[in-house]
Each structure stands twice: as structure tokens, then as C-alpha cells.
Image (tube, rainbow, N blue to C red):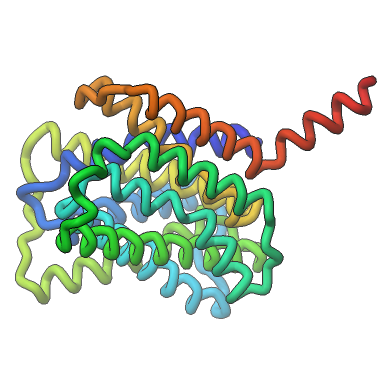
Length: 299
């Protein structure tokens, strides 16, 4: 089951980067994000009703829900939408791939979780691999102050993502399913964005094009309802440290999509980066040791 959830998360989130790019331009980012999570929340509430699952969370969970909604479904995406307007998406992907390390560190600091050496080692390998994959795109930008502003914004978004992971893990330890918590957290995040957009005088009109509306539908249903539910179920089953390794792997899917739609050119260094990311997966999940043990037992 973990493998299925992991594959679903990687495949869906690996393709959402292009959909986000397609939304940039006419509609302000806060409005696009509010529409995305507003639609996703309504779909999740409808599914909860169909499945006859409890909708109202206990009183003790509300503070975590509000914090998750603001961190994961509001600030996180605001940071990344604005970061992608400043710096190339490859740089943003490099910053976002630090999520496993941040989850390990923040889990230790705020929840007393033990640091897992294999996860940290795997995340570092994956981060080096991502840098190799995007080094050509990164060249010429690191001396630019505006680029550093974009990188700082992306890092803040990754911190918000990590906080949302830990909050979800905390609520799942209370016996709450991500279906229910995501519904309310997405609604809270969408409401905060909608109120902020209204106060700022932003228009809620969407771009009436097939490209924009298709991207919105994909991000709301696949990227949010399915993707976030699968990912946060992984957080509950595997812990936020190992689950967050998806953030290192899904840029590979994004590259495959970029090769098809945007003409990304592979190089020898890109192949080395891909191999490092795969190696990082093996180390992070301790698969090399497990294979060795199985072989030793079989012999």
C-alpha cells in the first residue's frame, strides 16, 4: 500500500508544476490558489458525505487544523507561486527538495522524534542529484539579488510545507483521517486567501481559457484531493521524514514532462543526477540493507 501511495504522489505532484506554470499570468496567484483549494475542499466534503464518514473534527483538533490550513494550503503555495515568478522552476525544485531534511530537523525540535541517519543521508544524496539535474538552469542566477529573494521565498514555502506535514502527523496520531482534516484545512486556507484577496481588491474572475481551466481542474482534483490525501496518508504510515522524500523524486517526473512539453535537454550530468536521486531513495528507505538481509536469509 505504501508503494502505491508513494507512486501516486510522485506521479501527480511531478506533473503539477507545469499546471501551476499554466496558471501564472492573468489571474493573481492568491485568487488561483483560493479557487483551487475551495473546489478541492467541496469535493472532499462531498466524498466524506458519500462515504458516511464523520465530518466534524473534535474540539482539540481545531488549533491544528487552522495552523495546517494557513501553513500548508495558504502560505506554502503563495511562496511557491511568487518564487516561480522570480526564479526558474528548477531552482525552486532544488529548494523544495530539502523538505525531508527539514522534516527530520523540525520533527526532532518540535515533536521529539529521533533523527534517522538513513533519511538524512538519502536526502543529501537526492539534493546533490537535483542540483546536477538543474545545474545548467541554475547557472547565471546565483549572483542575482532578485534570485536570492526568490530562493528565500521558496525556502519559506518549504518550511510551511514541513510544518503542515508535522501538523498532519499530529492529527493522525489523534485518530483523524487525512480526508477529514484536509477538507477543513483546505477550506480554511482557501478562506484566508479569499478574504485577503477581497481586502486587496483583487478580482475573482478566472481566465476563460481551456489551458487555465484545465490546469485549475487538474490541480484541484488530482493535485489537491488525490495528491494531498495520498501524501498525508504516507505521512501517517511512514512518518513525515520518509514520506517527504517524494519531494526529491517528483522533480524527475517534472523533468520528463518538461522534456515532452518544454524541450528539456538531457546531458551526462543530468543522468548522473538521476542516478543519485535513485540512490538516495534506496538509502532513505533503507532498501539496500533490507535486500542484503533477505539475501543473507535466503542463503
